[in-house]
Length: 325
Ligand code: CP
Image (cartoon, helix red, strand yellow):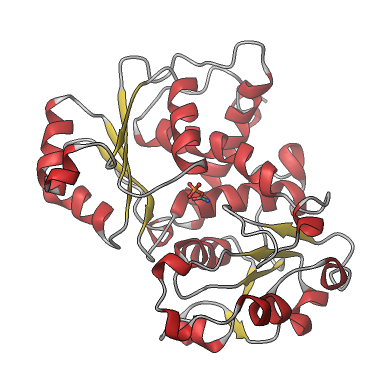
């Protein structure tokens, strides 16, 4: 494949290949020298039209660990503020020789447009587009789930999430993380339930490959992982925004609610968190919360995506046991 635009682009085999490659590359992070020469001479452009902390930094770290040259572009402070179009920005990057463009954009569909326009010749990776998709977030969430619930780095290679129950809670309507995760986690065999107030569910959610609930307390006792989402006020019309107190009371995860989850169950959050709204500080800082682990797994997953898209050689860090006995 040349681009990664949507979790729906990935078959089960594609997904397992990315996650297994990420496990191999994760071992590089444990070595004194964390760099591989794999993408030496290649250029990765981070093209960010929307704010980001985790995604931008981890794509930068991933590309650098593979020895690629990295150009970071932020719309703020660029000629986009003077009215320059996506097309002219893309043509400028192409002239500088981008082998891969990692794009975050406020418009759903912008990465698809970039990939199919002919404006650039390299690979396009969607780093979050509007309310549409965030496929590498779903991959890193699956990476964390597979490590914790499907056998860990040693036994989990090639493993899937069959029969595991993942509950995604909150602002499903505006969440590209939810869309990508519903598709990717079901591809890996998980049973996904989305939980939200009716006003924060998209029209058409009944056609998604997941169950739908309005009642968090009923699904907690049977969940293996509960993924809390931020309420995205910046994408909302105040008219249908629930009050903070009401939202936290019905859909927030606090210590007492967390106690209703099975002992092994995980609390996940893609970040950024609104502590006190969808998650209390007590839960966010508890050992059950994998938010920080998700971020570190994100670097390995993004290394794997860049490595596979740009056609690097076999990772030098490790060798596959199936090829070497
Ligand atoms: N999870 C995530 O996409 O975070 P950032 O917006 O900080 O990149």
